[in-house]
Amino acid sequence: MRFSDFFQVSNFPYAGKFLPKLYNGIHKLKNIFLQLVCVFLKKPLLSISLLVFLYVFCCRVLSMGFLSFFENGLLTMRKEDILNVAPRVLTDRQREEYFERGFLTITDIVSEAWVEKLQSTSQKFLRASASVKESGDTYDLGPNHTNIKPHVRRLKALVDRDPIFWDFARSIPADIAADLVGPDVKFHSSKLNYKWPGAGELVKWHQDIPAWPHTNYSLVTLGVYLEDITEDNGPLVCIPGSQLGPIFSHMDDANQWIGSISTEDLLKVELADGIKTVGGAGTVVAINCRTIHGSGSNESQKVRSLPLYVYSSADAFPWMAQPTPTSKTGHIVRGAPAKLAHLDASYCPVPPDWEKVGYNSIFASQDPTKLEHS
Ligand SMILES: O=C(O)CCC(=O)C(=O)O
Image (cartoon, rainbow, N blue to C red; front, top):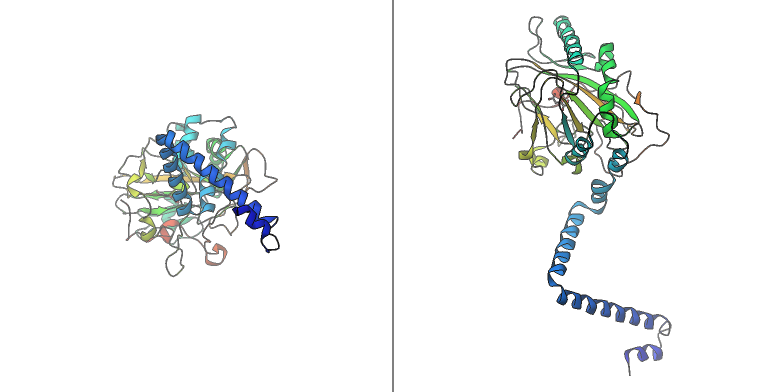
């Protein structure tokens, strides 16, 4: 009796219909397998390469989880859509580099006239800080601040401090943002970080998005160097490709915000790959909100002043209270407001409720006595 005849005569109720189909399926699979074996014997090199590729692909998908593989590899930032629109100020190569590495150093982009205006407005606020004794809405003061020697770590909500800062936000940085997030650009926030000689201030490794999570990861921070920045006066340091990796928690074991990535998580990051973004006054460093970055201490004799402006695509919306809102947050600075929200499918750690706990600055959140810079 043949195997198929057995099904015909069986008493099993579905034997007549179902089991012969199963038998045929097995038979076809067997044929496919035999054909594959033939191909393997005829073209062993090609077959081995294919198997190795499949093995590596499966390992990667399994180790990342299916969702994060697709979200990190395919779905974030809608790179192709953005690159399909003609750039305003960047080259295609620069835009490609931003998407590949998660950051971009753009030299000679801000005019000397703008650098001078920003510098003199910043100086005005440093002089005015002499009469300020503690941190508040305008200043984050360091421990060495006196009325004779300022130690301002941050000028907060920059665009609300002086119209010059808002005029600048709507000029060249908005064009750069349009080239990196798409033609419809929304202003998010701004601040000016100072690094004083000898103050030993480092900004520890962190990502920006955990402080202000949004529906997508288009957000870009544009840092504008107001002085010539070399390797020793506190340049921003970025880890290439880290925008495609996980978003790390910036809380400690007691679930308190620490504004930096834990020592344990940093073991998973190639810190040695960090690139110091140097350049003359007027250089802009664009950093994607997922890119791991930080900065070393200022070993020079002069203060380093760094205005930072954050933009998103118009279709990115915050899903928690914002830590550093300004009166201009949400303004469309290029293109049109969004009619649809864009959501990148991803997990993102939930920050503290800033409306309840308040936010001072990254310097106040991080403990500068414990440093993980490589
Ligand atoms: O001021 C710096 O060097 C780093 C700034 C920064 O990354 C931040 O404030 O998030």
